Amino acid sequence: MTDFNVTRTRFHLPDGVIYLDGNSLGPLPSGAVDRATRAMENEWGEMLIGGWNTAGWIDLPTTLGDRIAPLIGAAPGTTLVGDTLSIRLYQALGAALGLTDRRVVLTDSGNFPSDLYMARGLLKTLGQGHQLRIVDPEAVADALTQEVGVLMLTQVDYRTGRMHDMAALTAQAHAMGALTVWDLAHSAGAVPVDLAGAGADFAVGCTYKFLNGGPGAPAFIHVSPRHADTAPTLLNGWLGHAAPFAFEAGYRPAPGIARMRVGTPPVIQMRVLEAALDIWDDVDMADLRARSIALSDCFIAGVEAACPALTLASPRDPHQRGSQVSFRFADGYAAMQALIARGVIGDFRAPDIMRFGITPLYTTRADIDAAVNHLAEVIATRAYDDPAFRARRAVT
Ligand SMILES: *Cc1c(COP(=O)(O)O)cnc(C)c1O
Image (cartoon, rainbow, N blue to C red; front, side, top):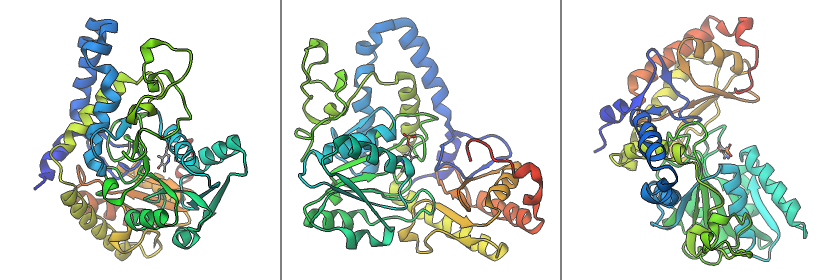
């Protein structure tokens, strides 16, 4: 059994704060400061360039990938860490398109804009009649036709938390002769994921949300062993070369997942991520899921009872929901600012979504109850009418 009283102690949470935004940026793992300090003082400081070999910096993309793999149901040697999620998505989609003659990429309108922007940019670069087909999330299954070459979906919707059935859609895509690219940005560390069980072709995700790797922590990419040695590469950086230190004039991709490497890994940030991943060694994803659902259901019931003006934007059925709860409210931006002023931190997504991440590693039932009470007071007193809460900042 996972001891959530212990996992909570492994984070630094500021006094007086109830943090319901771990779906956007996880809090600081207590062990991260020491790990980063050691990486700087003992490794960089003492070893200088020798750190690449002596401290194993050069292998961090794969050693960290292997630590994330169990959280996403991936076999060892199939997952790699580095670069940002937007870059990884581009890379995965490009590889998938290189494995099919079909030209249509199917996705849904709930997908994160960056995924759509990156896909459009890639398809434009490829030319050749490639097109992005965007349908409603509920219409994805019906839109999977013989024309579709790649099904590219974010499993858990960043706004509503609605969760696609990865196993069913992957099976259906394969039956139609299509490949899959799954974005696990709001799945990794949030819900149990079984990439191998689903037979997923490619997956990408980020490590600064539910995995708590810190602002700007590098993303991950997973390539099924079926494709790892044949997947074409788009971003032919030297570290994805079969022999980077041969400095050959031509590019030869490395065998396996290493071909997805691009350039020099961010070592300090990776040491921070490593400390964050240590916490997961003591976590059973089934326990986490059960607690996430219990806390989410409790939050929904509390808010619906106390704030009739808010409308649930997330699926009510927990099996169709990731680990966040969203409500629609016309004054949602200002209401969220008023809530944050009271120490309850969630966030806002245009046009009217108040979003609350549910993160059982450090969020308790008492936090949920207190958050409901604060929200009820903000709504009842119309605290959101205060002009100070209406000015939009750069990051919402
Ligand atoms: C958070 C998120 C991103 C962000 O991409 P970065 O390149 O890390 O900024 C992309 N896609 C989805 C689905 C996300 O949730």
